[in-house]
Image (tube, rainbow, N blue to C red; front, side, top):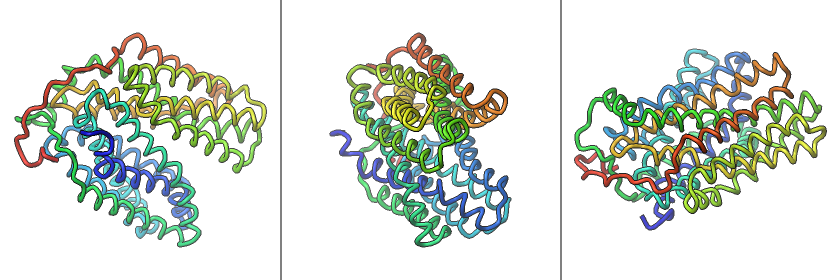
Length: 406
């Protein structure tokens, strides 16, 4: 590893393309489904099914990484994502088929996302890991920021179905780039592979306390991150009466600040430690959520949105880096499968929790209450999670089979 330059073609460029494709789907998929007669319920289920597929695949994919290899998992995930997306474009209004295809999309996302995360955790030295993984997280943010605008333009120019096809083509391009790239060899550190279930049990025994303390902090933190995406639009529309255009401006400007900070976040992690970035990030996110119900007009909500973008950007890649540090040698995939399962569950639970609470207490009170998640996440990290910047990982074992060379 000479630095992040070695990761451009095997990791960063394909990741940017796939994240961009996911962003394109944000405005296109619901409009496409409605255009073809899907009910609101079916549309919601189809959108959520990808999250469910990723959530369900996290642990199995992590357990299988040592057997199939990081590179093969990424390539398989890219192709599954592309094929499932094309399938959605031509499936028509067939509920079972649409849901199945979207579940497959989620499995593809789990394959490529977890394989690249585990690859970075294995190949990047500890002293460079914060920057390398922060760039990985920042690239995802950039793709999600640019994708929706391009998706709307493509949908208008080519039609919604062909915008979905373009997303699949982008995934195939990512596959070709990753397949052609010469990437530094990575070893999983496993010379004798136990059964996947035995490997998971081994991780739970050796890293159970880390998953409990750091994993709970991650759960609260990821819930808070997802909550802000729900609370600001709902509060802006229901409490302040802002238009969709005004809310969109706030969200976009917040995202711009967010995605601009991934490199400083990585530098802070490598210079002063993972908690030096994560703890202030969660505290500021909590403060921002307290200020949401105190906003009385567009300008004040915009300033709060910018603060939330700053806070989230400061934490770019922190949870992925912490997970990579805590992963036991030889069990990186299995540990990160469990680690990402916890984080994905927080992101999946947050919108539902906000909706239920807002129905009972109102969106203003709900936004204020959500600030407590920031205090919980920061407190758990500060008090119960050791700093991992100087974590020592034992030298990986020699590569014992061709699949491990990828």
